Length: 317
Image (cartoon, rainbow, N blue to C red):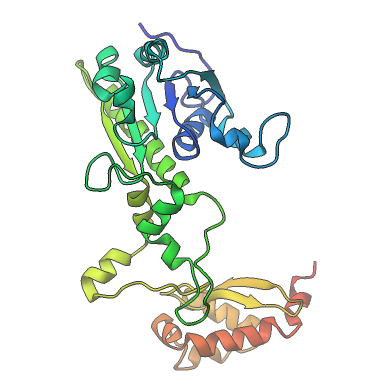
């Protein structure tokens, strides 16, 4: 019988074993811990590298407080047989394992899927890697930045072609790792739900989450557009490619304001705000396809208004 620590939250009673480092697997486990699951995090000697990323506060970084919260941490050198035995004992009383080593690395330690499910046939195992557990790139190392590039996000996070010679910018957070962690957490809960709905027999499952696939899944209609029209999605800066107006517009104090009026009723309201009630009846802006086709002229009208000083009066409490 599995005895687990009881806590608050909807996932109280679940035990998750985290064999993770850096961002993706710890992000996944943290989500589950925030919802009440008991998470046991195995760290290498010296600790998870994220403990040292950034300025230190009492021996750790503020970033670590995000990834390490609500977890029980234990230090184990998985190259040692005694450490592997401890992990197997923990796996025997856990509901799920999440890990983000390079594919095949855990098996080299003696912690492959067969070994883990050998001590617990009902165990759900979530693997997170750059390119997945199989395929020609499986042995390549990849952090979130590589997943974002291969998945298409880094290319699209740029100004329109010909506008700037600067490199594409990152989103500002480790979005590739985080999205993969979200998929892993969702997959774990789906697998546990199915396991607990089954009548008898082992119901453990193996999940394969790739950073590249996770980012590609966020690329809106990129693949259907290519399949239907042969179009290759291009970066458009701060604009929204398929709806207008939606952009960042300059203000009179040298800053920017984001305006999105992506439907006809919203555009009509914006036109009144711009003191241009005629705009919705202009054939260039009468509907969304027309506004997208004439987005340069439309953005010039809006920019003239946002940069003319009247915006500050509107936003003054």
